[in-house]
Image (tube, rainbow, N blue to C red; front, side, top):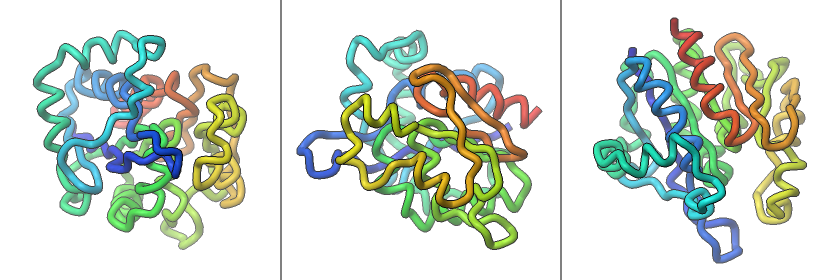
Length: 225
């Protein structure tokens, strides 16, 4: 079983002068769920090489069992430093794709033609596509086989407006993910802020926030099984 994990390459938090990237928990937890279940995991990002880590995700209050394991895992850190360039990834080589969040994807993966094409190909090949937190932004330009937005008429979730408000980034982000998913005809729902909430609609799997990352990976594994 082969799974591709796609990470952001974007590291600027709008024009705030602060850094962003991917959220460590949203990468580490799913990675270990997949790898521990025997999946062979390949990492990719738009620019290849080391993807930027959101510095906030390394603060003590956001550490979990998975992030602690990641910090001690030199082999995985080396693997992360050498991600494949996204435009060199071929959907036919994998059984599924997983996108971790962090604010970075709002800027690059939401608009990346290689990413859009990749997700469309996975879906066309009847393979599951999974996203957590801000990563469903990568779905905004993705079309389904019928030519309509892939999320149209499907149950989806993602980082909520109330959570974005809580982190005080509503006026910094290029768009509010919840609003965009709804505008495209997605049947958006959410759980309590900061609690695990994950949905599956056919081959499309989405999770609301960092707390949902392991749940999304578990649903992905069940779907593959």
